[in-house]
Length: 189
Image (cartoon, rainbow, N blue to C red; front, side, top):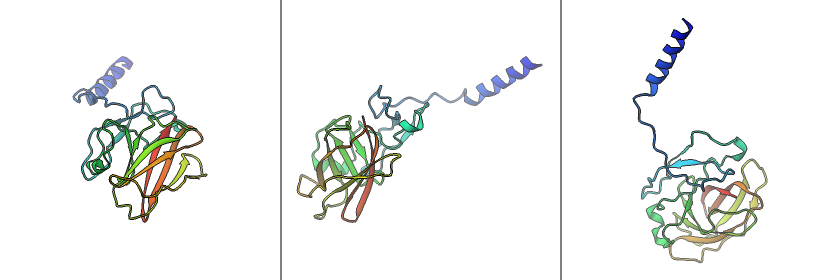
């Protein structure tokens, strides 16, 4: 009787998943083999309206203290509205949670303890406002304010910056210019 019940259970479990094809793994948006980051899968869909690419956690997420929940680094072409900035093709980038900013990574992957060049491309006009960046390591309550970046670069609506954080981990960067604000989570190794 016990074998019959086990066989019945195994058949019912197999029947629930037997008709669906296995999902294809997308490339990881963060470098492979970096245990300090969450691996996420990323679709290659970005709209010209600038909606964020969709991310989903991998089958086995790392422990909570190592997670970078929204800090994916993308390898796909950035949204169409960034084209006026004339950023080099093939660069990896990060995306604001509200869709107002893209950060092109010249330092890839970004490293803690050094100046990481990031070209911030903003969707809304700068209107003469400097870019303010406040960095907070996830799990910490102590933000670091970085030097404001003047709105004096071009082409397009850009702010070239150097971002230096003291320790590795996932850092939430709150970017604001005028009344516009967005948040980008960036994994630093």
